[in-house]
Length: 268
Image 1 (tube, one colour):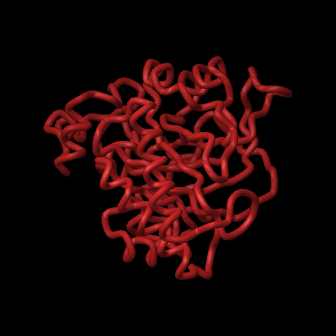
Image 2 (spheres, helix red, strand yellow; image 1 turned 90 degrees about the vertical axis):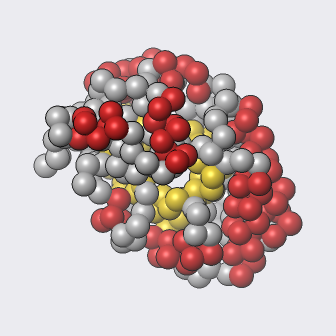
């Protein structure tokens, strides 16, 4: 299965760096952090969607809501799930995402998965769906099966990494394994490396710290797996793709490209 390399960074890297990455690496999609949210105060990504579309970046919108570990707000319950889900939907509308686009709720904890957090996730997802968008959940692979059972319509962005220490990762071709290798076979996306230093001449000191990901599509805001696209050439925001994603069918043009599209080279 073809997968597509991406990255996420809580702080926006800057316009020049985003242009450089899209031109000089195999990274084709990025996490897009909403802010301010209950557990994410930075607003650097806000208002950048149009610019990123112009560079043909795929986008995975992220909402960092209530948490059970680490920094941020710790009020995971059904009531806050509804409030935060409605807030996520407002961000989606203000930033120009089309109906049925996916927005991902960020859960930073692993096991256990307490009932209060389950209530929060379920209410958040219901509020997002009620506003015309589709829920996705970023979570540990150890929680993924429980999250999927709780919200069957949610797309799962699973994280599973081998280290949380800052380390250099060689490029410019970054890992693009199938999300099925994340530890949850049905994952739509996989955060496979955290605190990765990638070489970017425009970054301070020549290195940019990001988390590295792979996904089943070069545009994880569209709820469709296995688009047969060449992200170096094809428009990742074509209306036909969004419509096919909403309908759950791969567009005929993409099927034709499946026979001829260049598969990204594997790293290593």
